Length: 199
Image 1: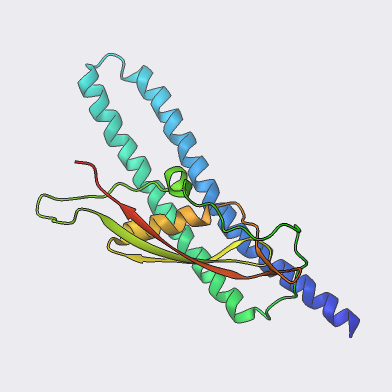
Image 2 (image 1 turned 180 degrees about the vertical axis):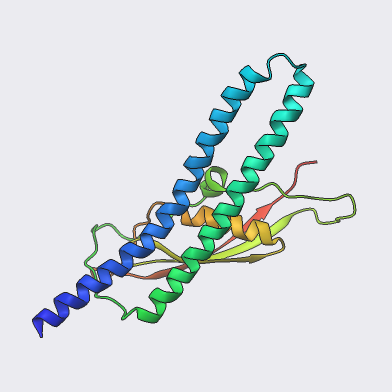
């Protein structure tokens, strides 16, 4: 019987690591494309030096938009992989064991005030006929007993904003989980996000 529980813990640990691998891969996409952009800008500055500044900037802006579009597609595809993995985990999850709290300090709600300033890469596309003054999204997510972000879901006025908000939340490294009677607890969070376009 003891061997069964040890085996169960090992399998559960492998499942958790598989999910974390998917989230780590999402974080790596940003650094990969940042590197691609920097390398392009360095090469383009030299290779387009003979052009007028206006023409050079136009060519560079066009290429940078294409690079950022590829990045966004890769991020969205990775977001779908995370969702599929989480669905598999929810079907296989046995609830896990209670974990002792890592800290004796009382639980503090995570500070997310600057989260979107650092992680949200969203620019609203407002047409002349669009009367909206702002985009709105409400994101819910779970902080696991281990402090990992899980089951991120955003709903709101703009589908792209919702996906970018989800990506921004998954980019958070780790939270301190809430603690009750000396044991960490899964905690669900909900927070609104408003984007007001600049005129």
